[in-house]
Every structure is written in structure tokens, then in C-alpha cells.
Length: 426
Image (cartoon, rainbow, N blue to C red; front, side, top):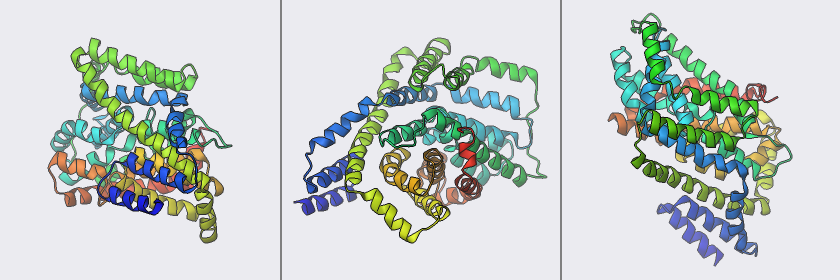
């Protein structure tokens, strides 16, 4: 019966069965083969309810959906252009920054491409950037904000690791701090390459004028305090993460419905439902993945994997190189939430065995995932960009590869120089 179940599960997966169903089936078959009561699966599903940090996930997600429904993206672009448009290739710098911030707030790089693409693409055309450059910029910038607070994937990584009850513990604030320098490195290298690529060119600049800055500041006056309140509250210790998430959600609702009136009250239930459908999917996969991870731990799969790798891979550097290759391929075929809950319980014990700090691993994991989003041939953002801008996939591939090379250089530095991730935590 076990072998029959395995065959059925494989056929179901090939035919497109939902990920949670495949994971639950695998966990149940594993426990049946070990003669363990299947009640353990329901216990694992319930265990995530007991995680205080998990409260932040739906609240930040709802706030992100609210911001994507409002005209936040237009106000962000206008403010950034007024402040930095005077710089060489200033609009490209603006695009990188706005996309990163918008992805951090909404938690979805695909949403960033769709929401900001309509604003940035025509502006980049008028500023004289080549079609290939602007296509690559918008496609790759969509995932830059995954390392910035309050990125939902950072919170989810902390939730997954907390369930593993490791000896070496950390908080989600440690992860937020750890992502700052790696993000700055990626952002800085992209800007540096952009300035070098357009050296000697005639990209027009937007003159800096105080009236334009003042007008943009007035337009964004209700959204500008949000990062100050949230980040200041978290890093000062005044807010716990769950409290910061609640304050963020309340502030965004007030700002977008009462002050800006971008989102009418009658539309609020629709936004709630759409955001909670996404959260419900994440939580269901998360609970089932914990059950599957529990089976793998009982079956000593991580230990067997570590023993196998020790026999064939001796150094930490070789392990990290292999890890990057695997995660890049994984990021191209799986969404980031599924990858986190499936792979982290497998990889983390092995990484600790090689002396990799859990916080450093989290930053390496997410840095790989954000590049995997536009890794050919099946990176998700490639398809979103192709559909959004009506360009052939091959053209999108060619547009993205210079940006990908730059980010791979940054990834190598983040991977092999742990100080970049750990110095602020330490």
C-alpha cells in the first residue's frame, strides 16, 4: 500500500496537484511507513498557531495589498524623481530604489513589475534609455526588496527556523539588520554598473528644484512617516514585530481610506479577502511542510544528507558554492514561500554542520531566491515581464543577463564574506 501511495502521489504531482496536497501525502506516507499515528500531521498543522511571530505575516501582507491598491507607487516615483533625477542616469537610480521599497512593503516582486512598470517604462523611454536596458531594469528590480524590512519572506524564514528549536537562536530583528548591508551592496553594484554602462552618454537629467521637491513631499506626506514609525519602533525595541505589523496595517488603512481616499471603504473587504487568501495558502503549505519536515527529522534525512556531503565535500566554501547553484535552480521553479518551508528544514542542519550561521544562511537563501526569480528559462518574473510589456521571452532573457551578472557578483560576496550579513547583528 505504501508503494501504491507513492506512485499515486508522483502521478498527482506530475498532473499538477496543489503543493500542500503533495507535501501532506508525502508526510502521511512517511509516518505510515514508520508506524506512527497520523494524528501527528494535525498536531503539526495546529502548532503554527502557537507561533507569536506568525501574527505579523497576515498584517504586513494586508498592508502591502492596501498600498498596491492605492496610488502609493505614483507618489513614490514622483518623490524619488524630484530628489534624485538630477543625478547621472538619475531615473534608473530612482527605478532601482522605488522598486526595492515597493517590493519590501508589498512582499511580492511580481506586483512591483505590474504596478510600477506602467509608471517607469514610459519615463525611461522619454529619458533615452535603450529598450533592452529598461526592460532588464524593471524585470530584475522587482525582487530587490526581499532583504529589506518588513519583507514577508524574512519573517517567514524566522518562523520556519524557530519551529526547528535550534541551540543557536536569533530574532527576526537580527534578520532585518542582517539584510541591510547585503541589500546596499546589491543596490550599489547595480547603480555603479548603470553609471558605467551609460558613461559619456546623453541621458537627460531632471533639474532639481525646491518647488518640485515640496510638491512631491506634500503628495506623499501621509506615507512618508510609515517607515520611520515602523523601523524606529522595531529597532528601538518599543514595538515587537507583531505590534509593528498591527500599527502598520492600521496606519495604512487610515492613510489610504480616510486621508488619501484612494481605496474606498466598500472596497476594503475585497482587499482583505484577496490578501488573506494568499496568507491562507502560505499557512496551509507551512503547516503541512512542518509535518513533512518532522518526518524527515525522525527518518534522520538531514543527518544522512550531512554525512553524504561530508564524504564528498570537505570545505565550507565548496558547500556554499553547491548551495548557491541548487538555490538558484530552486528559485527559478518554486515560489519563495514554498522554497522556504520545504528546503530550509533540510538545508539548515547541514549548513550548521559546516559552520554556517543561521542568519547568514537566511540572507544567502533569500539573495539566491531574488535572483532565481529572473533566472532563465522559467524564472517567474521573466514571464510576468514578458506578459506585462508584450515582449518575447528571449528578448527578456537577453535584457536581464547583464543585471544578473552584476547581482551574481554581489551574491558571491554575500556568500563568502559572512561579515556583511553578521556585522550589524554582532
